Image (cartoon, rainbow, N blue to C red; front, side, top):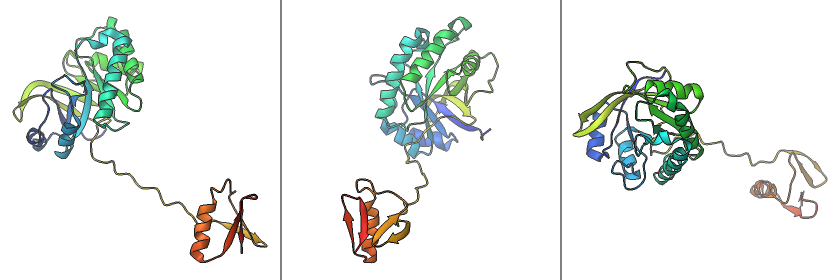
Amino acid sequence: MSQTTKGIDCATPLTPKTAAAVAAAGYQWAARYLVPVGYSKRLTRAEAVTITAAGMQVVSVFETTASRPQGGAVNGKKDGAAAYLEARAIEQPIGSAIYFAVDYDAQPKGYDLIEDYLRAAASEIPGYQVGVYGSYAVIEEMAKRGAAKHFWQTYAWSRGKRSSKANLYQYKNDTRLAGIGVDLNESYGGEGWWSTKPIATEQPAAPEIVPKVVRLIGNEVITTGEIVDGRLVAPIADVLKAAGVPFAYDNDTKKLYLL
């Protein structure tokens, strides 16, 4: 298990001042709402940059109203499409997670609808990983059904139980930090969070442009690769030119010849 990290979630957009204060208090990520224009809790690209600049990661969560999962696949499809548009608009990196909230005391009779909701949402967010926020029972059941890839449990409605499947755990609601209302969380790896900073990746080695000449037959250059429609001519020509070797290319035979 990865090292435990501290995080917050909040409906209030973070400013440079509040983001810096949250980070200074030891929090390493902030969960914010990936919802359409018109919702005051909406995460913007500028805010995501602000969170990243403060040294924190971003966790995306979609929730317009708490009861949306009760609408099953119909609502899941609509919410997934809306979340996808927002994710692309704020340049959320492909491969990160979008959590969909089951923000009520879900009962077993509603599990099928929740599963349908999540699967429909997942179908509308290509490239992103679907996550679910909910109670212990929701996390356990959706993990068992394979309806999500990431799991965010809230203590609410969990009746003191903790799921081993949870990547994030919300343990306190409605507290104050940096002058705003927040919920407190911790996480254990596999969060699906993201950053606006470019991902540092190892650059592939430059392709070898020196042709592996097997032999010469007369003045014909025989290589290990075929020359098709001239596609291999440029690299070979570059090498010969650099070496000062005169050559010619026969368009009919697709072969290089030394002069």
